[in-house]
Length: 119
Image 1 (tube, rainbow, N blue to C red):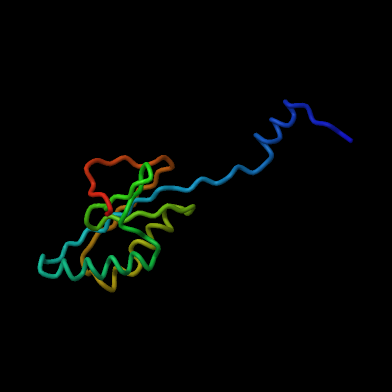
Image 2: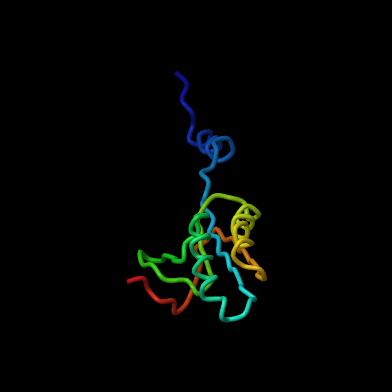
């Protein structure tokens, strides 16, 4: 039987063993540029489509959930930014004619202020 020294075991775990993947925090903003009369209906449809793609309208911190601002969506997942971007705009073309999409990625928890808590 062969026994590894502590320093050898540490080197193996640091450089050879696969590291666990950490989930990324994505925030996606979809901005609607159409007339205000169409916005309310379109944003409701947008929320359904974004939910179908796995995006949520809440964010959690310290075991509490908070509502995100209008047209802001969240997804915590291990994917590349371009995949999230593509998913974030894919079905919007069916709902919105004039819009923009903005995606951010962060490995650390997101910070925020004064969001309404989910009841």
